[in-house]
Length: 107
Image (cartoon, rainbow, N blue to C red; front, side, top):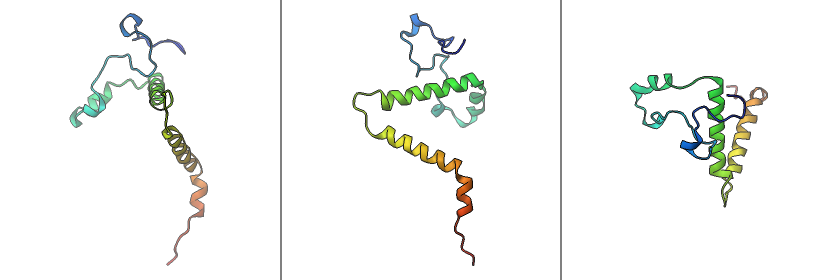
């Protein structure tokens, strides 16, 4: 499987048109339905390779796009979400500069 190929689990005759937001592997228990004593075995069944991590982020990106950007009548929510993420990101990368300018009470 190279860059830009379909996942190995995808079969056009079974799944129909390819959807980048869908996971085509073997279905497992959703995270919200996992009990506390089943959490460790559930985590051990996950694929932790870098390719699987990139694929998971890609699926999440496509789901976000389908929900907020690729709609007939989109709202202002994606702009607020992007702004919030940008504010958190820039605060995080500039935290070293901010912490030197704290106001302390000396008493």
